[in-house]
Length: 147
Image (cartoon, rainbow, N blue to C red; front, side, top):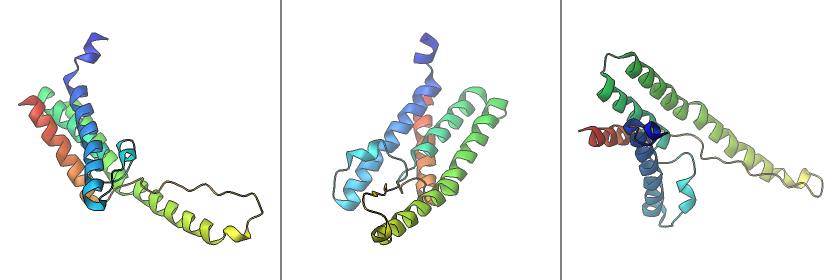
């Protein structure tokens, strides 16, 4: 248990993850002039916390184990898959949710009395800039932690 608590790579990932989530709240505060604390636990938005976490991990592993190590290769492949998924599949799922919500709203009068459609969450994926800046944040945090 002690090893887990002092695991510098894991701490780096957690700092990157929390930093990205806090930045999401600040980004919404600046752009929309409203405080949405719920963004601390939400997916989607600027910057991508998933990208920040996996790039922080890959950078930490690269700095401790070396860029030629199998561990760095594993962490890098994981980072690429997560970041690709955020821009692709998860983003498409968010777009589908928007469309389903709109259709449900438009067809609500056709449903039987008592039917209450559940609104689907739409902030699931990321744009390329959100993934890029999340990844950059993760790398910067890892560099600060290890240099």
